[in-house]
Image (tube, rainbow, N blue to C red; front, side, top):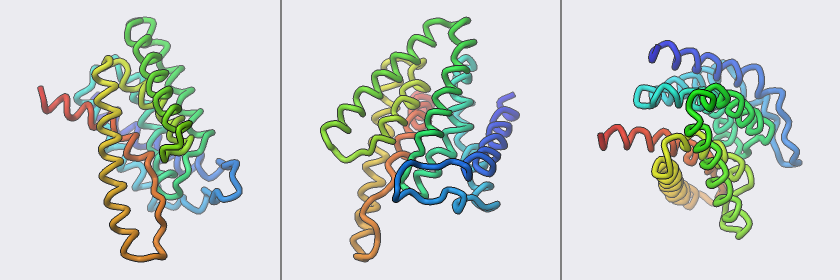
Length: 215
């Protein structure tokens, strides 16, 4: 099952990229046509990335898989768009959050505490990132929406799991920011902005990995 589920999620994620992403429109005059991102090569890359990240399930309690499945299946295409364009489509984010909410129902019926922590995690991380956004500290509102997904998927691991996920994603984002700054400074024509979402998204995966290493 640990082998079959990641493969199924990778296929579902690739199909989402191939069939759903081209039809998404972003309400911004500067937003690109997402259909131009989709090719057979990029579809394979998205599927492979999902398969790789889905290995997190090996170190995750099966009860938590209800939230991890949509987080991986729909979340990887979401942050792939961000990586390519620096835009996080609201519609795809809402779809991911909705899928996670539906998937949380059977989990909550059998383990109410996990469902409660998922809600607490989503609200807490969203609230923190909303405050950061309101203070104008350099993140977009797409990152705020993404924060709810991060909090929800890490919530069942408790307050410490949420904190480690946010810290890991933020730290990875800082490393990415530094590397991008060095790269951009080498050529004035290179863009100064970069996608922060993929690093944040990877935070829960890194948190699980660190927990497994710590034992």
